Length: 312
Image (tube, rainbow, N blue to C red; front, side, top):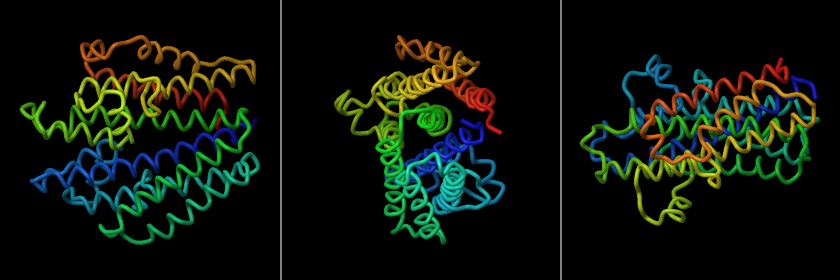
């Protein structure tokens, strides 16, 4: 496969995943804002920090307010990671690799762009926000479903999966890191009802609220949530799960091309920090330090994949 085609598939699915992640963050923050008695402390700062958009937002707006943050994250053309820009980029990448996609995979991506260009043509009214966020999540699920249901399990599938899980792992790690260093207002709140609400908001933002309760019943504890989102091999947005899938796809590419690259070693080293671990070890090391190291390795992996398979 040409590097340009691999690049298009990789980024098509990174941008699709990014659009869904942002929608889930907005959904969780909007839900959390309803529980705050202080309108000035409604968690929107933490959302901007999670997506790395705080500086860009503050350069354009004075003050952090829910409606402005929502508009910035959904449809601001100056925000390269807004949902509208992410969907546009996903669709453009899909168009460059049109012949590598089945009709179902292409049409579901194209329909996503058409729907979002209509729904996000103007600021979203508060009453329309749930419908808009549901549409984003529904369309990304349709793209994944069409892709998984119709595509051959070959290198095309593997490059798409690598893009999906690198983006997803980055999102989960950033959300967890923000919880400890931005979202929690004061040490005195640890273990309080406010703290529990914030931790539940993290579960909602990665669509893990119900599945967490299946595993841990109703026992909302920071250590257990961290364990679930970092070390679980069954939860689709957990770091370990994501990296096991990346490893599998890179192994398939190694078998396909007969070549091993630095990216394979980076995945192996990262998995070594995740597998056969207990969450207490991570807390002893320092959750922030652990997550920061993970994010750096994840970014490094993306660069190594691009270099190894000539994304240019």
